[in-house]
Structures are given as structure tokens and as C-alpha cells.
Length: 108
Image 1 (cartoon, helix red, strand yellow):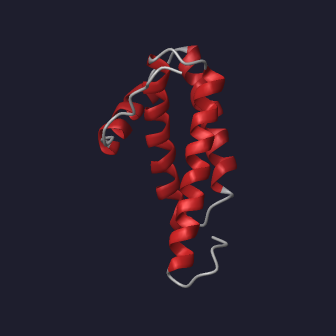
Image 2 (cartoon, rainbow, N blue to C red):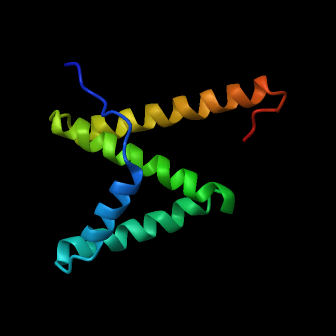
């Protein structure tokens, strides 16, 4: 596989402003995407405590931005989804290892 470039630190606030502008579009495609996104958000939020929702959302936003960069490298969507899943798994494992090193049980 060709070497791909992961973007530098992502400006989350700028990304949120850009998404808010796009959300205001009234074309059918954007409205449909927003409906699906809202349903996905509601489904995913059930997996997190109230205190974790913003952090999880930020992680998802950064992951989406990184995937957009990978998509520009013309990787197939299924490959980009796999990469996102592998990255998420690594983050969960790293987070649990850190927690265990602090004397916790690592179960999240």
C-alpha cells in the first residue's frame, strides 16, 4: 500500500463551525445525510456516559477528518473504514493499558 499522510493536529472548533454551515444547507442530499448522522449520534451516545459524550464526539470528528484525508489518497471506502476501526481499537487498548498502569482494572 502506498504511504498515506495523516493530517496534523485537527482544528476541532474550525471543523465544528464548518459542519454547522454545511448542516444549514437545504438540498435533499445534505438533509438526508444530517438525518442519518443524527440517528447515528443518538445510537452511539447510548454507549457513553454523559461526561464522555463530548470527548467521544471530538474523537469521531477527528477520525472523520483523518478519513477524509485518506479518501483523498484514493483509498477505497472499505479500507478507510478498516483503518478507522484499527485506530479505534488501538486507542481503546492504549487507554486501558494507561488505566491499568494507574492501578485500575482496565474495564473502562
